[in-house]
Image: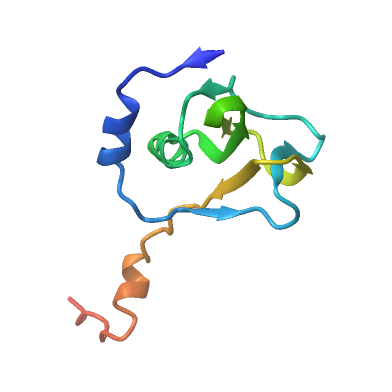
Length: 126
């Protein structure tokens, strides 16, 4: 298993908390592509859900974040984060207990200059 160093909390603080994620429609579970493939990087262990989302938001290639938290004995919880990277496209979930697939919302494009000034009169002719 891969472990992320102590820099993850710093990344989480630096990333704006804009809630850029939405759950995939359907049952909770693991992210899957149209072909049924995982489409992600290797799992990162010991990462909380908020840290997982922050890592995905900080990556321009990340299209979705998958997070699993498995209760263990003595109150311990194993947590794993998997970032789904472009060009993969998540289409559905594979039902899996204690696992969530969150799609990263695309950043809205700023309106074109012509749209911003649609109500302004055209400039005078030269």
